[in-house]
Image 1 (tube, rainbow, N blue to C red):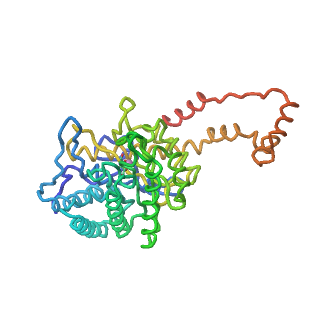
Image 2: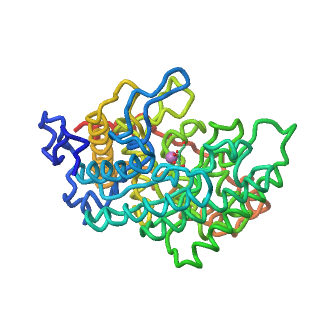
Image 3: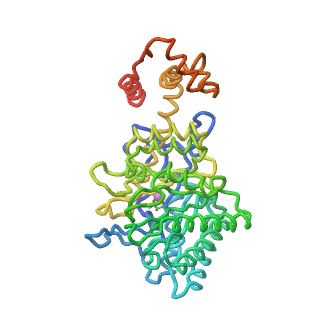
Length: 437
Ligand code: XUL
Ligand code: CO
């Protein structure tokens, strides 16, 4: 069997003092943290598209990375990607992957041929999964790249495009179910609009929900027990993306009765594009029982687009892992690196360095989040900050017994409210003292 990541050895944990670039410094897969091995807390996944397909092209430059794997026919390239992907995951100790239909198999001359290509590659992936024990985290369908989706997929003005998307989703669901995936993602690639001058927003949203209901009905009829996810993103590619952020998506899911089947797949860079922090989006999902999965990456604060960089910010990863822990951890979801190496990082080794750095960042995030919880000072502060709601007038409010009249009576008979400091700077210093100890 051909080896693609030739310089990459079996990557192991060597500890923080190691200078071996092909070793984990913090990710120790089997180390037990709060009763569970790190790998179960983190459930790392490889994104097929960025890792095996993306060639580094941008609007100003052609690809810098050869992703043909020494093959020339589209099906041979697709098969080689399977070999390269499973070699990479095995060497890295990554136990899950995620894919779009279009990343794993090439389009054919007709829909029937595309379907046939997909089935052949799914057969091959299935055999590799059996051989290695590697699992599918989630599947999805690319209903945004092809010109037939220029007006959207579920939200297209063209019923033919809607039908095409539905057909594609059916096959992507079949592939996901066959490969034992525990999730299926809807990222609304072109589900949005540029101008209201040509847009019937009400019909577009109703139709997007109709497509999702069809997907749920079909997958459940085929025995799919996993989660559906919407992955919020505010802009790019369309000006007004319908799935702007977690709160917007929750409103949509509830309006259309989809909230029982759908959770959220939160992507860090999408959160920052929406003007939120990553942890804000995770928290909104968590407190609405809709936390599902994560697309880990980071943006650049100086750039206003989805740079999909590998995450290196331990501060942000710690705040994110606090939310994951508070949500009870991953069940069907996991931590997919929806991230790509920079255009000049064109060698296969760079992909391994990128994953090592990203996995170490989240391993540290997990360790530090539990240290913050075990330390207890921040949680105690928050509990005490709201302690007023545990008795007296506060309890009457939370018990639903207070009325405007009773609160007016209270205010007339009591002195001006006494304020306490929010102590943000003190809490930030605790956070840093734990992060850097
Ligand atoms: C796009 C993005 C997608 C989804 C899956 O920004 O994040 O790759 O994760 O379609
Ligand atoms: Co994503």
